[in-house]
Length: 283
Image (cartoon, rainbow, N blue to C red):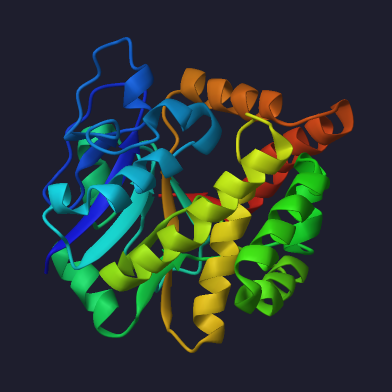
């Protein structure tokens, strides 16, 4: 199987595997000399916009430079501390591990054999959804819901055939987080041609350069639309490397700072401290 599950990295040098190579996200802004298997500023790219697009700068680079990856049949995205856990027999949404980076591949059961096993019976892979009251209400708890409404309006204008799926997803309770997936080549290109024009038009309208938290919800709409069309997903738990206590506190502070308004910050803190603990189990 010719597949590449790209692992986004940004803080430290990291080498991956042939199946899961590392890509330095925001490489155009790197001042530390970080070394990964690939850089997202090699060829046509939006690497310098990483503070706005987050991990999507890696996906844009993959889209525009697909041949540099060997023209794989399947393209996926994971993160340096979030991997798919290749075992659907567990009921968990997320699993936590304190395994060091060098054992993370082994812990996640990441292998070509397991990937082939799930793709034999499924059309694509995505995270197991987290249950909330609704996608839209959950977004409103920690972000300005007007941003989401503007992004969805752009979506409906550019892709009117997604309008019904968008409404269904936003009012539904299943949330697909993390912008993680494994797509066949044709679905990956369809996804890229779906999401990047929306985000570009959204930024042109708002004139803002803040982080695009709406991107996860747009990805969720896309995943929902695939299922409406009858495509079958393998929904896998996400294995999260919790890191040291210092790293965990740093991550909590970063997420708390990223939301707007004291009310939203209080809700974000409660969700981070309570909701995730309820959904996650350490292995």
